[in-house]
Amino acid sequence: MKKLTQADFEERRAILAGEMGLNSIAVIATSPVAMRNRDADYKYRADSSFFYLTGFAEPEAVAVIETFATREEGYSFSLFCRERDRDMEIWNGYRAGIDGAIEDFDADEAYAIDLLDEEILPKLQNKEKLFYRIGHDAAFDARVATWIKEANGETRRGTSAPAQLIQLDRIIDEMRLIKTPEELELMQIASDISAEAHTKAMQSVKPDMMEYALEAELNYIFGKNGCVPSYNSIVGGGENGCILHYVENDKLLKDGDLVLIDAACEYQFYASDITRTFPVNGKFSPEQKALYNVVLDAQIAAIDAVRIGNSYKEPHNVAVRILVQGLLDLGIMQGDLDEIITSERFRQFYMHGTGHWLGMDVHDVGSYKVDGEWRPYEEGMVVTVEPGLYIAPDDETVDAKWRGIGIRIEDDVVATKKGPLVLTKNVVKTVEDIEALMANS
Image (cartoon, rainbow, N blue to C red; front, side, top):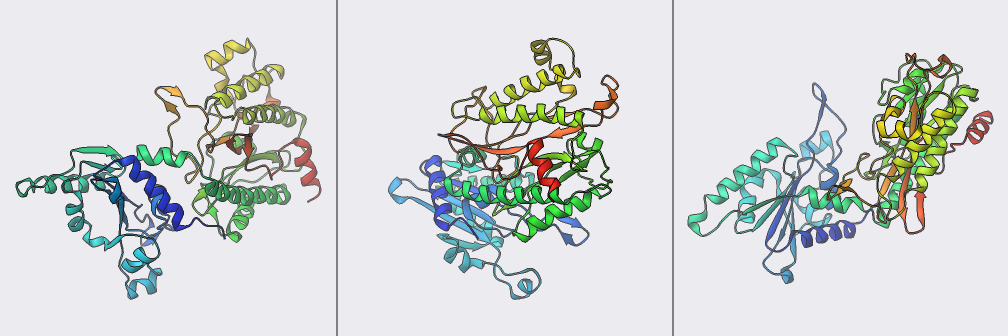
């Protein structure tokens, strides 16, 4: 199993410490445990940015990174976590504990999480800047405010609280936006597993199958590879494919309909994101094929626009132009190409963007604009490319033969010096390849 090493996490903390500057402190908490119902929890998943800096996946943990008066002093990493507890470990699993935080996670200091309020105060005193995730959690905001108030109360003893409060996400988000080769390896593994799952779905589908049964084929591939879905899977047959975030997955898949699957897995905290649309019976109808090829042409051109130096928005602009021209050619829309684009009349059939950042979160962190302008692609950025067309089943402005057809095609793309690198290329997407795969299953 491929994993990041403690050296990777230490390097990230060192970069953060450099961005913080001298005599500063950063405090970051992980996610709380979430209740599913009554006394049952959701399976725990650590906060992405917290894990990004620590590699620590247990709940009830806070990381503290301190810099000092001179660069020669470097930085210090403290981890507050749960203590070892034999009774609790029998019920809920092993804990790293204080010793494990130091020995296995390279903390310079480790404390019981119950001591956070007590031990944080001397660390805050006389620091110039405090970095934390302002607005991320109201309860933690209140807790930090209490620490600052208490630290300010010590001024008569010659100490003071940090004078500047700075948004920690601003730094970490930008760090996470550019993926290292090690991160891209993990994302490639996630993409390969997800591609295998989509291939299995194409081979397994048949008329009168339930959407949730097809979803189960995906989940089996994810699970046998040690992964979990990176988001709620969408398996929409027929007109359900026109619902962008359809997750009920509880209807019958009908002969003659398309099925839109937007589903992928997370491997070692790194997400993939794939959408494919294919015929339930293995054969596209003329109308389905015509619309599908418009979307595919748009997607291929949009992928080619994910190039270093191009605007983040360029793939969307490219895709929209091809989609609108296709709708005009098929007689679904009428009018002038440029006017339709300028007025955004196309949003009747294509109402979402063409992509988003991808990484530890499926909708990953990082600004899309810098100084008010769409940022250019840089080496190591990963973006989804996912144009679509959706003809609502009740849209009487369109000939009945097109209604209820929903199509989206999505791949994960890395901006590299050699051009776009498609991580999710292992699952077919041309009409000919899809039909051939399904015919041989």
